[in-house]
Length: 254
Image (cartoon, rainbow, N blue to C red; front, side, top):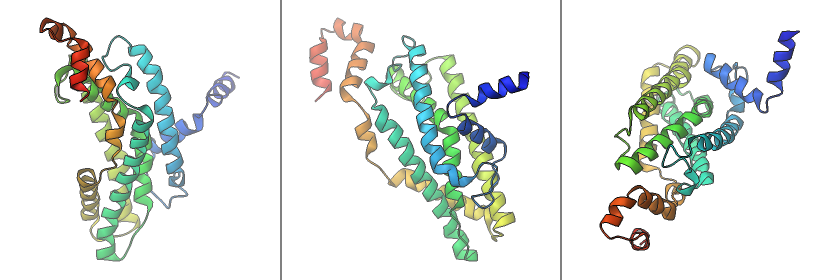
C-alpha cells in the first residue's frame, strides 16, 4: 500500500518520465543502435529541449532564493534568458555534430564505417548536464562582476561550488560520452583505431569552439543592465570621485 502511494506521487510529478530517462541514461549510458538503449538515443533531441525547459524553471526558482546574495541573482537584467537557452541548444547541436563528424572522419578513412549515434549520444549527455552548465555560467558571471575575471573565486563557497560542478561535468562527460563511445567503436563497430577516432572527435569539437560562432553571444548581453549593475557595485567609489550615475551610464553605453 505504501509503495503504491509513493509510486503514484512520483508519477504525478510533471515531466517525471524525462527525469527517469535521464537517471537511466546516467546509470546505463551504453550505445546500441539508437532504438534499444536503456534510454533510447532516438529521444535525445526531445530530451535536450525538455532539459532546457526544466533548467529554466529551476533557475527561475533558485534566483528568487538567491536574491540579495548575488549581484547577478536577477540574471535577466543582464542576460536575455531566451537567447541564453537558445544558445545552449545551438551549442549542444554544434558540439554533437562536430564530435560525430570527427569520429566518422577517422572511421570512414580507416574502415569505411560511419554512424550518427555518437552525435545523438552527445546530445543526450548534454541534456543531462544542462543545469550544471548554466550553474557554471552563473558562477563565472558573478566572478566577472565582482573580480573582473572568471578565474578568481569571490569566496570559499564560490570556489568549492565551482570545483564540485566542474568535477561533476568532467565525470559525466567521461561516463556518458567518452567511455561508451570508445566501447562502441571497439566492440560494436569494430574499427581498427578507436582511440584515434575518439581523439579526432574531441579535436573537431575544440575547433568548432574556436572557429564556429553563432552570433548569439552579442544578442545575449543587455548592455544597459550590465552598466547599471556595474555602477551599483562601484557606486561608493564613483561618487567619491564625483562621477554621477547619469555620467557613468552615458559613458558606459557609448
